[in-house]
Image (tube, rainbow, N blue to C red; front, side, top):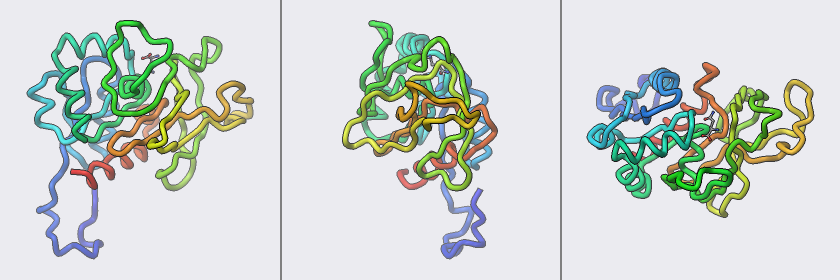
Length: 225
Ligand code: GLN
């Protein structure tokens, strides 16, 4: 939370600050971890399961989980169109892993009936790291995240195969992971991006207790709303 007294604009009165409400799509996936990490950033965070709840939030987080299941549930819970519309209208959105897949305009190795929310001019490949390396961790530098590299946990993660010219690349897989292993085909792959109001990571910062990616998103939300 900000310390208003140490800021030059403290005269704006700390209690006048609007605390953003950030929703976490709560149909499936690691919802609790995102809610907890967001609350640590000092925002109000609420689960979103229905359109009326979506109407009350300033921004949305799409959690890790299974994008095909979430896509099916988005349609069943009548959230697909309203969420697409809010994102297209500029509501800030952050997706981790399956959330990144949902935000991509195009998916490779998806299910043919998988729905996209869109918002990011990227092509992602689902389960890109392959069966051999279902999950791995490495330290990673992320543009906009100050300090030490952060621990990136990849679980059946996608990578970004193509990114449009309006997409900022925030992180790529290093050639050698922090365990000393060669990253092989994953080396140099794009795993964190931002396009305007939309942020996405192929990894799961919500699982590490390091709130810096969520803090980056909250700072984006603060600037936008
Ligand atoms: N492989 C999952 C999918 O396709 C994503 C995995 C994750 O979110 N950890 O949605």
